[in-house]
Length: 356
Image 1 (cartoon, one colour):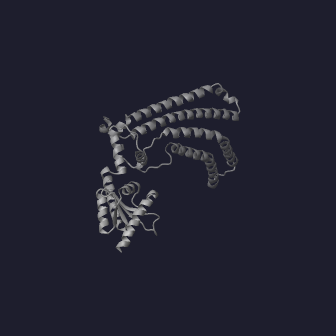
Image 2 (cartoon, helix red, strand yellow):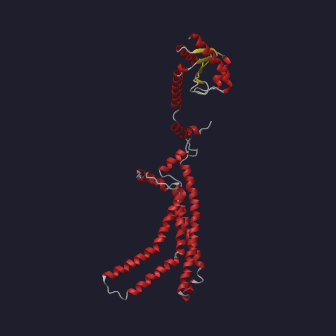
Image 3 (tube, rainbow, N blue to C red):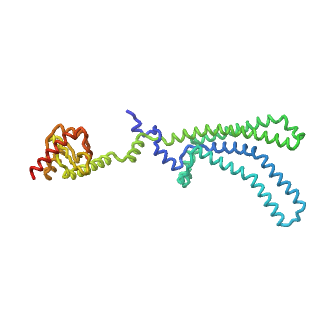
């Protein structure tokens, strides 16, 4: 026997409904390291790409102040004008960088969880200020992993910076001998290479962390077999309720079928096991239709209803069996039974004419 059925052990992958409920609560598999790695890489790439643009605007600021400071007489209006000029230029320098970093930060989240917001995740929870729960979180497996990850990042990033600086020790003492442009170029290239190395390293850390976070998330939403059964009951309804609904539907269908018997022209019987009521209205139907059928007790009721409304009953065992097995209520009879049913209807019509 599978003891998981009784132990309640969560061994089954989460159902789509459980995943959707977790998503509504803000429980998704995501890593903060992905956004950090994307931001660091994007920052250094954009700084390197926008360097000429930023340098041009900085030159304009320096030129503007060197030109206007000598003519400034200390009035507030002149100071305000110079301040607004510097503020506008700084906005032009920093604005594209900040906008790009904002887009990259949002993109880092969208890649992981898509476009999703959850107000439930922002609701205050008293369990978060519970000291015991706090201690559990501090000494949990997740906290230990986060601590190890932080220590690894500090040491490895420090090592990358150290190796980059050591590679530049050959020319750093002689930087005063270079021109200003060459010195700035060497420094920026060195910083750019160091930033790329750090960003790529953080990207590797982010990939590993995302794998870990996804694994932890999948474990946290696992379900027991009993939970899956309960969810199925909630979605599909209790089996007893479904049985009662089907029973009620059968009763209603039977009542509609019995109500349609007075419209029949003939009831073909087996003679006792089967009863099939046939109706034919040439102006409304392309072929005779079965308005009621049944076997056993239902067949007896069909015959009783037929007697109440003076509907002719014809015993034809092969035809009755063929109609019962090959035609549903409300359907026209199959083409292969046209001749046999037409013969029965002709017999009934002759009886009616003699009675009249």
